[in-house]
Image (cartoon, rainbow, N blue to C red; front, side, top):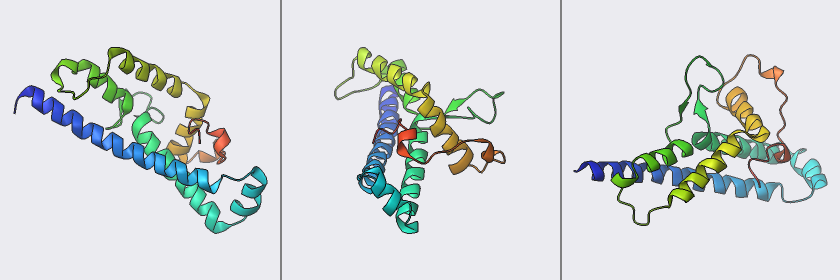
Length: 168
């Protein structure tokens, strides 16, 4: 196998996993949208008052945040500031940067333009600098993926409007 074939195969495998995560995210997003599709009074009277429906809502939100973190969060960017953050294995920004770096070594069926790749990076940078993203990371890092000792120090909302990153 040539170097170009190896890089292309590695890129295809990474893309397949990213695609699977994105499909899972969309499925979870649609479930949450279905559960919360009524007005706020419906949510307050039916979803929040039902242990079953509220559990489904919270579990779907938790899984959605964990799946999004696989694509958007760098490891160690909270807990270990002395360690240089490194991307998750399927971090979107790192994937796009690798596409740019290895562009000539990848056998694309339909290659993206440099402008398209740059636009993706700009969009990801805007997301990572947003207040919503910070709230999202707190939920993921302090509550869902880990149990932080100081978790009571953080104000947490499980309402979707406070997590506008999700855009349901």
